[in-house]
Structures are given as C-alpha cells and as structure tokens.
Image 1 (cartoon, rainbow, N blue to C red):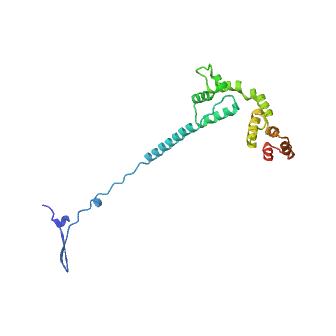
Image 2: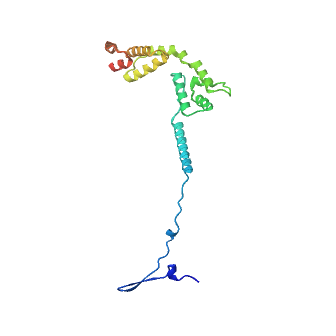
Image 3: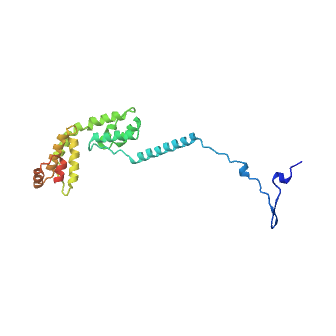
Length: 221
C-alpha cells in the first residue's frame, strides 16, 4: 500500500485566497541538491612530475639552440693557437662535450697546415693528444719571433681608422709577448702604436703629451 500523493510531495497544492483557489503544480525534487558533486583532487605528485618534465624539455631546447648558435671557429695556423684552444675549452665545458665529442669537434675545426696533424692518427687518439701535436708544431713559442717582426714592421694603412690600428697593435703585442708583465706589454704597445702612425708630425704631437698607455696615445692621436 503506497503513500498518498501529498505525503510523497507529488500532489498539487491548493492555495485559497481572496480571488479564489489557486492550484500550484508540484515541484520536482532537486537532483543537484540530492546528489552532491564529488570533488576531484589532482595529485600533487603528478603536478610536480609535469613541472619537472617541462623544465627538462626547456633545458633540452636551450641546449639544442646553443649547439646551433655556437660554432667553433676553424684554426688554420693564423693567429694565436692558445686563443683558439681557450675558446675550444670554454665551449666544451658549456656544451658538456664528452671526450669523444671534444676529439671530433677539434678535428673538424682544423684547416690547412693545422689539419695535417690529423694524418696518421690512431683509432684511440684523443683531443688532448691532438692538442699536444698542435702545440708542438704551431705553439706560440715557435711563432714569437715572427710575431715580433710583424709588430715592428706594422704601419698604418692609407685611410685606416686609428681604432682599427689600435686593436691590431694590441692583438699583435699579445702574440709577440704572451708571458710578459702588464707594464711591459703596455710600454711595448704604446711604442709600437706611435711607430705605426707613420707620420712624423703626428708622432711628435702624441709623444709630447707623454702618454703612459696605448689607450692614451690613441686618444691623443
């Protein structure tokens, strides 16, 4: 025997007023109120794992971009071997090259006479072994006299900017006197710059100001 409609809340209600009785239709039960929506919690471990994965992916992209942008300049025995090797070591540390990576990148960067050190290398050769060969054949110690002769013969070219002359003299002094004290290299650089001006009147005017460094001499000129 079932409950009457009024007891179940499904019967129509009658409201008696001044204007007469009014029938109010029954309201269906609220599904939302009767069935609360469960709360779903995202595990913190999953969020942290996703963040770590994104960070790792970002680092990988940066590393790839660095490999694309950074490129070791070739070495063909012109210029300073030590400067080239310093760049090589910095890039190897930054890009985290393995010993195998270092060997192949170094070999790929050698040109001209420098590439001849690769002839006859054994299969177990390393980057350090190749660097030793380069220093034996093209090290600064063997090139110092040539660099010093080039420094003494350096003269300003027609219409050459003084800034260009200054930079070239500074570079040549470092090659000609790689292990000298700062005071000596400054003196040599200043004298070489003044001599390279190749203009008696300009040289006298610069020396009259008694510059202490090549930077001062360049500013006066």
